[in-house]
Amino acid sequence: MISSAHPKQELALAAACLSLISVQIGAAIAKTLFPIFGAEGVALIRLSFSAILLWIIFKPWRTFHADLPWKNLFIYGLVLSCMNLLIYKAFAHLSIGIAISIEVLGPLTVAMFMSKQKQDLIWGGLSLIGLILLPLGGSHQNFSYLGMGYALAAACCWGLYIIYGTKVAKGGGNTVAIGMLVACLFALPFGITDIGNILHSYWILLLCILVSLLSSTIPFLLDIFAMKKLEPKVFGILLSASPAVSAIAAWLILGEQLNLYQILGIAIIMTACAGCSYFSYKKSGLSIQTET
Image (cartoon, rainbow, N blue to C red; front, side):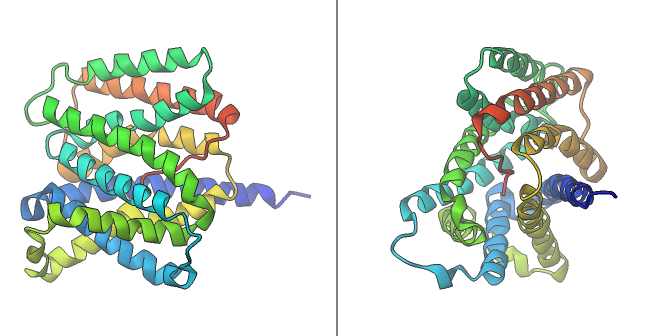
């Protein structure tokens, strides 16, 4: 008799893969809105619509009480806001595949720090080699050191997001909804300038909603389902595929192209992330969290 556990795990794996694809398609579509709202405006729109949808779904106001980890929730929201603002600023100066390749170094660093194994030096060295390769042969259209700086800052925020996300994770969807609202409020001063353009046409409004759904709401709901069935290291290995999926999405939607040096650099960073996830997370016990 075939165990029912296997179909459930297959569904969880499919959900995690769909989450990954959804996030990267959302990122590529979001970049098409930069000429209208700017990177900061698109980040605010993504956070705002995501906050609204999560509050409708989880109704977190019903769980408000003094014992909530408010300090960690505010830090979580601040980090989430900075992560979104910085990676979108990076998208404005880099090909999306390159920006995501740099950003995933944040979770990689957290994994190495938590596991503290000698073999982590291999993954750290590989990631550094991949990072060095990314600027080689790049044109002004797909690479700039300013964009690299934004992506590295976003990587730091993603690392902090994992740490503080673990601290507030017990509240489930309620704490994420609260954190998303906090993130929206922090992003408001940076993206409010051109936000009125959202009413210029129904098409723009629909695209904004689509970006929020694909980038935050749908991946989050899929991850909730998948994380109940899959080991953390599986999420880590899937996360290592983010640069490739983002590069493909950016090529299909935006026509962004990479040279051989950049493709090799991305492949090396992916290898480092996959290796670290497989060997390190199973000892660290740290939960994997995708970018919300």
